[in-house]
Image 1 (tube, helix red, strand yellow):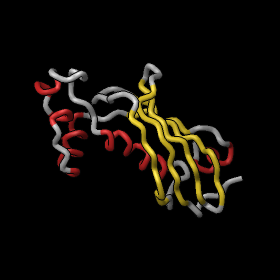
Image 2 (image 1 turned 30 degrees about the vertical axis):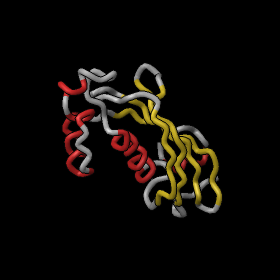
Image 3 (image 1 turned 120 degrees about the vertical axis):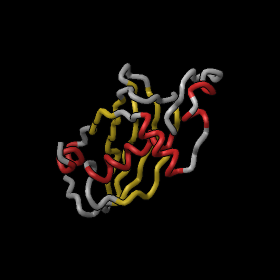
Image 4 (image 1 turned 90 degrees about the horizontal axis):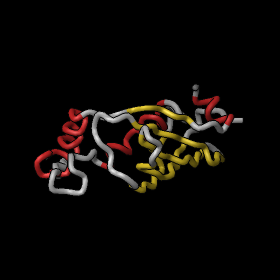
Length: 138
């Protein structure tokens, strides 16, 4: 689906994705967040999660990729993003990211952002405000 057709038709953009343990390790290295909840399987056996969870901000990073590359696309500048974490996310499990256009005015897009597990459970929700004056909308 092109960014033009997605934004002009108001159809949600849905993309499947998953993160690997290597992605989590790289994010821990880059961010400096070495919380054992993300990295230590022995430690997490003593937690309600039972196994390491993905960093919340790593999971939300899928929105940056989709907004900047597909919806609205190249030239997009992030202005704001709200996030609510509903359920933990785990490595090597497929999730679905959904972006839904709520409004657009003068190149300012308000977009609902959600991640669901492959069983349909909402794991993360929020709203993005982005600027893109290079994408035409109807």
